[in-house]
Image 1 (cartoon, rainbow, N blue to C red):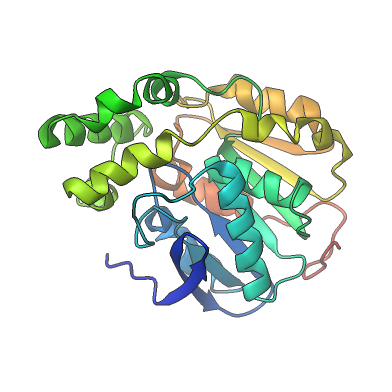
Image 2 (image 1 turned 180 degrees about the vertical axis):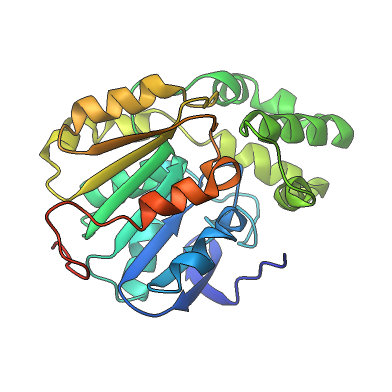
Amino acid sequence: MSWALGEEFETPDGRVRWQAMGSGEPVVLVHGTPYSSYLWRDVAPALALNRKVFVFDHLGFGQSEQRAGQDLSLAAHARNFRRLLEHWELSGPSVVAHDIGGAVALRTLLLEGASYGDLTLFDAVSGGEWERGLFQLILEQAEVFEQLPDYAHEALVASHLRHATQTGFRPGVLEAFLAPWRGAVGQAAFYRQYSQIRQADTAGYEHLLGEMSLPVRLIWGREDRILPPKYAEWLHDRIPHAELHWIDGAGHLLQEDAPAQLMAHLTAPWPGRAAGDMVA
């Protein structure tokens, strides 16, 4: 399906593309890496039947601007997310975040002073020792990866994307995720963002996780190979009041592996809250 973000927001480091759909209580969907808002192509329209849904591509990702010199750290993404929430004039929206989108959402809430009504995190970077695997290799050898021939770069990105799904991609989906990272500009952007995503930017808020009072829902694929179940347990230990739900047979990309089960959780009522209630 076609996926176009028709709105623009200017940040200090470039343009962020975004789109809103539907009407009702607001919910914001936050993607991770190396994905884009295309990951929400099925979820967003379904939620928009009853909610006003906001989607966007992080700076340096998808349809947002890619150029040299951009600050693409988790701290910068959190500042940009706060600016977007202010631009949208949202106070207390629901926030749903995946992968590094989880770290961005948490940092925006705990260190940037944002307010959410509730927070759903699934297969999300949150804290602890997550700087591993491809993250760690690129941090240690960024200059080597940047010089890969285009065919080797594309093979690496495609393999990494496939590693995230347990069931495999539907026709055309892998191509859509690969598109922003192709060519000289895309390849440079891919390693630019990976080389700036650091564990230090999540360590700064870890001590605040236990102080969160808003409703929190955790959802995790039991077959996640990017962030295995121990990361869900680490987060649940630090936010004890959070709900924790497991999805069997699903990997890191619940949007691809188990969209129906994901939607069931995203539309389930929060315990003790009537429909439409918001938490300040």
